[in-house]
Image (cartoon, rainbow, N blue to C red; front, side, top):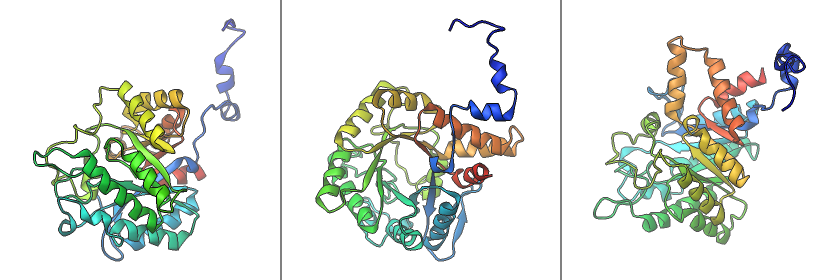
Length: 331
């Protein structure tokens, strides 16, 4: 750049609100948001999650009501996560294959309430269903067995697709699961069901409140470091993304979000594909804690962090602030 002060004054375009709007490089709208919701048993049930202020588990009828709310707000997609009762959890996660489980009932309720006016993204992993809290099946040594787990994940994905899911989102981080799921969807009459892979999912300290919400925190035996990524690694994330795209993923996800915006940017620049990020439970809880402590204005914190995802290259963001953010954006 050859221009010099005072010929160039960068503050000129910031002087008025209309000029700032005209020169704005990144735009955030409700269409950029995916709203994660937790499903629980019962009728007319709302269970607040203590570690996630403002977030609740909803019975299936409440999930349908939230779906109608999302449509009105302009939110295009919901992400569903079940809080499976303890008596329905098992070492093999068999409840994941039940066509009448919480996830499938919630999918059908949303479809009945909203038709095709909203997308339904469903989590494929076994941790909401296992008694040990791991995302897959354990071998005799306690190691999560990759190929045996993939076989179950395929059946779980088909179960959700048959119930009406629009996007299958495998979050388990098993090797080869995207290819196996894609082939199964093609061969079983679901060629238009998308796959949004959790391609770069890190073994993060930010997941605690989520585990409270799905009831797995106290169940988890050990950790998930043998399959979730080391937070120190960036190049490995690119390898994971490349593999998932080659195997048939329509879009990819980076998780967590704000601490990994460098990964979002790397993925977007390298592959030029739709990249999503999950603003995870710990990130949400920190914003709420900061606002409660008077450390920042809640509305401003919410919108600024979401804008940062878009600026980094995200096509969209999974966020528990989705409904609140959409209300703010709709004015």
